[in-house]
Image 1: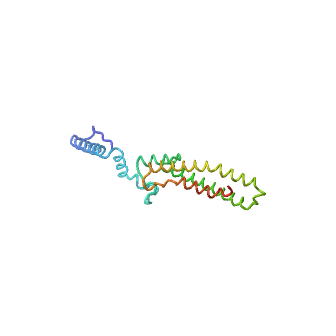
Image 2: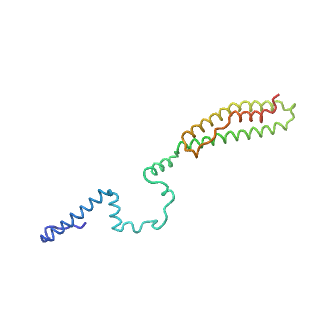
Image 3: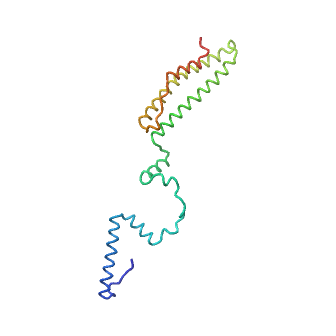
Length: 187
């Protein structure tokens, strides 16, 4: 808005300029009341051409900018930056991690079993007994891990939407299969 020295204007022009100024002020106040100060200032800057030569003009938005908006996006970005994640996702990761841990140890025991089966039984009795002690010791840990996984699956099924639900592991059946698979030397 330009500065007007009211003293130097004739009376009729002064009244006209005052009415124009009052009308502009009323429009500004009405726009602020209706749209808010941010929208008003953005509109004012657009009218002044301040958005004409911005970097990235004419290029599409980045996909992450279009996914969400507002406070949720801000909170989500902050949480992502510090490594936080929803509880459902962390439960899924923990279930996967523990399942992978079990699978790796079962592969190791299978490798040990294959090796021990190639040995002459009478000559390598100590190695066979060491293998059996290891199998017996891991059985308790295996049972504990299966119970923990099922507990996490139950928590996940309570918290998560239906698409993320998982079936609990058949712990007794898996323990029985474990015994049949690795206790081959018991008599």
